[in-house]
Image 1 (cartoon, rainbow, N blue to C red):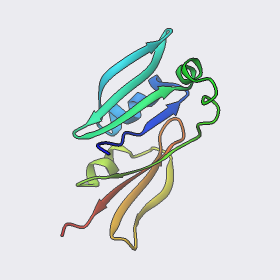
Image 2: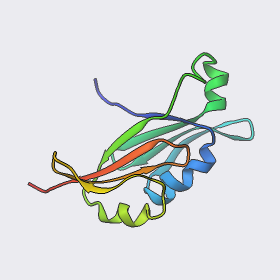
Image 3: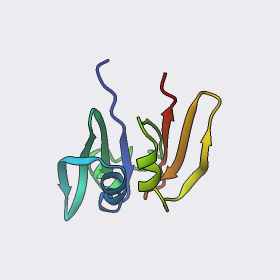
Length: 125
């Protein structure tokens, strides 16, 4: 294996971009239209890549998958939780900020489409 890139299937890419680009800090690379909306985008944050595809685009491409794909949970390790804590203020929480038994300080939120996203900072060794 060389790489793993999550693809989140969402109802509206346009509604998700303020979260992923505006708050989390991804940049939009590739974008593919689907009708008068976005059907697919590739987002990058340094070496981290995330793809968003609209449910309508999946329906047109592989109809049998469009209604089988549910919500995802992402675990994103970050160097410093502080800027994410600030940027994500007001986002719907999946849990209160916490310290875990495995040594992480975490923030859990939902993106605009309802996917669970955990941002975690581990103590520096």
